[in-house]
Length: 444
Image (cartoon, rainbow, N blue to C red; front, side, top):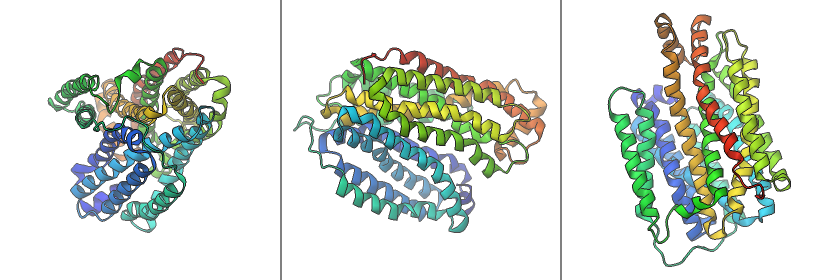
């Protein structure tokens, strides 16, 4: 993205490149999930891939930063399907005894991609140019469409026929989540935009809940949350995503002085990504044997303990490899949660609600990560208030450079403030651990 900014200009729109994608992906997930219940999964998955690929091709050809932001929003709309529909396909294709295993395999694929993707992206930018980061999705997407059309079952719609899609509910949910996400992003800045948007989010989401209770076929049925397993598992998904994504988003800032930025950032996130993928790949086959609650309790416990270890490792003079290895347990704990939580949710739902329930878990996980990053930003600003004023300018320069060319003194001030801020995701992980004991012990 810095390369794209140098090419297109429009530095003021830099944050929107991410925000537009995240927003449209998040708000479209419940809609994709409900459509999967009504229309079947294969056609929607193919449609999601096509939208994602079209957005990618347009983003690669973007003539300006504004156009790039708009096309990233199109990309995100397709990404909402790619997050919600594949796990719905697994849920309706495999019996309950097999779901945790195949969901673990699916989660491991995402983990491997998170390791390979940034490295591949760096090579593409270096040798072909930033536009090819988007263009490369076109042939990959074509292969994905071919594979999906051949392999994904054309499941017939199982929900009630003849009922219209709940468009008012979908639009209220989209508007409420958009107000919430942008309000959280603007909250640390001066002015009333952030609090105003948060107030609007409360009103819009309240209206959404009221409407869904009366809709004949809601896009996100409130009665699902009356099921104990569904409500508790989604709460844990929100809290654990709050914890892990807040940490992973800020971890690359802690590249110690003297270590090249790109190399240090890759080192810091690599062990946690590998641990996440390994745990997802391995743990799924054991969930039916031990049950959801023990696996989730151990996973959230490891996540919380890993964050304690990471906080202890962040200190002036720390070695980048020590910091990186300290992040691995948090990734290990998070990898254990994915197969257990989602299979527990799916096994508690009838097939007619599989898409809606699966999309709700993916949506709340995405929302938890967004709220976690915003919450950590507020905590970091509060912790930074305790840094001597003479060092604040140095810390601001360090943040702008991502650790590149920092001095030991400025890095020490940053590390101290970050240690205090990381208490917020630690509390979220501890809450997830306590909540895990509310899962009925009979759930497999």
